[in-house]
Length: 163
Image 1 (cartoon, rainbow, N blue to C red):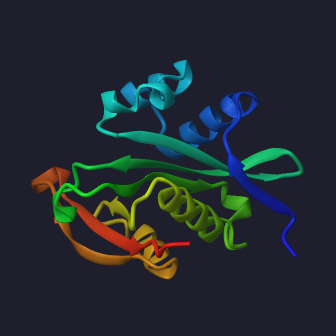
Image 2: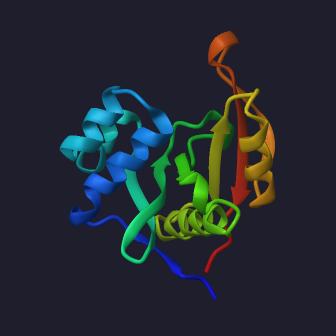
């Protein structure tokens, strides 16, 4: 039995989510500022998304992980069809290897299904073997690469069967 839950972000969760984002992405870019002021969720089109969602893993009411997922129609490999896209997934190091990452990805897949899309995609830097392995362990397959040179990413996908 698990001692944690995964649920959608609430307004009260925002400070914890921002803290977890900082642990993953250190620094302050446009999406970090948009997450802090709420426009990442209210104006997802500014960031290439149709819809943007955040799901948190909580234990004892404390946020210990998150997944950000968007609905996008600009992923070339999907020919303009909407696809769920894992923008980022993070679990605090001391809570890893307990199934939280899988639960977050499964929640992102359910969110994607609710948006009417049939696949969940993600990208990973080619040298990030731990992330590639994680993605494959939770059901993703490598389908190619995106970008050029320094911006190159490994593109992965996972089917999202209908409910």
